[in-house]
Amino acid sequence: MAAPTRALPRTVDHSVCSSVPGMYCAHSAGPPAVTPGVGGAARGGLANLIGVGFTGLTGLAVTWLVARGLGTDHAGAFFAATALFALATGLARLGTQTGLVYWPARLRARGHTNLLGECLRTGLTPVGAVALVMAAVVWVCAPALARITAPDSSPGMVADHAGQLRVLAVFLPLAAVADAVLTATRGYRMLRPTIMLERIVRPGLQLAGIGGLALAAAWVALPPRWYALAWVGPYLPVALLGGYALRRVYLTGREPAAEPTSRARRMLRRRFWRFTGPRAVASVAQLALQRLDVLLVAAFGGLAAAALYAVAGRFVVLGQFANQGIGQAVQPRLAEALATGDQARANALYQAATGWLVLATWPLYLLVIMFAPVYLGAFGDDYRTGGAIVVVLGSAMLFSTGCGMVDSVLTMADRTTWNLWNVVLALVVTISLDLLLIPPLGALGAAIGLAVAVLINNLVPLLQVGLSLGLHPFGRGTMVAGGLAVVCFGGVAALSVASLGATVPGLSAAVLIGGGLYALAVFRLRAPLGLSDFAQLRRS
Image (tube, rainbow, N blue to C red):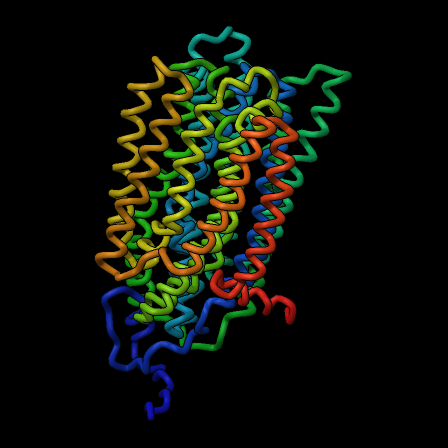
């Protein structure tokens, strides 16, 4: 029988010993027990999936309103401006979207709650400072940035583009801080603030604002910068409410403990940024993989081509939201499992999350690939030429989701430097291919570059995770989910296209027949798919 757990003596400065990788404290009785199984991750993942589903649908609606209401050139300017805003915000976050989950989860798992306040200050303060600097840079450089991303546009178009960038710059610090504080709440296993504020409140307000502008445009001409304001304005209430939520969860979870020494604080700060530093560069590179191609298409192919690329690839964001929704629920538990050496639990979490991701996203990707003309036609006749872009990006995303949250596994295992080099490699490849292919192929060249980068950014970490940690995503649930999606949506959709064509009736038939078969099969196979964990929701 194991020896009883001993209380940690308050006279010994060991408060940070076992909270950092590679350190051991002889005075510690070991980490406290963590919740076994994947039920908690399933509950959080399901709730977050509902939230990201709403976010994805509202984002698609916003894209439709912008594409329909502004025309291709002004829509391209809007998408280029928001892409640049996302890049600047990602740089200001300094990689804390991982560190502020990893370290609170690790400190709590190791029983060192007296260092949580120092951890939050270490992560949040630099984000606010850097975000203010980035906002000033974007404001001052807005005219030059507008000329770079719209080189062949009229002076009036360039001025409108610069006005959008300056509106976004004002709200950039709020966006960075809002993301950081919501990330910190997830380190406490609190997903509700993220789901309510980031997944429902912000996109809901964005849709309401831009929808209102679209209605008003029927009576009065509005400058494009109003669209930028309606899109970015909701970050203000999200930042305020997110800060309030973090303060509450911090005060509620704070336990009486000895005040950490200055040495322990310094060690935590050093370890925090040693872990987070590589991830800061990697997160910016990862975001550049998702956003830089829009800017390159605008610079080398024109604003109309940028609008076509943004619209054709919008469905990819829906899958990425699903990945975030599941990943945010699994990450803190994965960090705890890897921190305590529970490899079996870590592998179970990874495989379960991959199965849920495939189950949620493959039907969407397969349907969009098979019915690309219907999808693109919904945005207007100017976008119907993007069918090849949809096929290329959809195929890449099928592969990516089949690998699961492999980069998060690598990061939660404290291999942030590996993750950094993986993302940098993928970014170099996509930029090189973009510069080579965009001039002759336009938006399709950018799609090919992104698809190759997605393959690299999943294959390399998949090998690293398998060889160094013995983890892989190909569990029974993943295989069953993939097979069901291919049969019910790939096969049924192919038969529907053959008989009714890539039309709205054909899509309707594929959704009704394939969706019905899919729902029935998922219910019958809920045990191997890991969906039995969701039954616990009835008791919540």
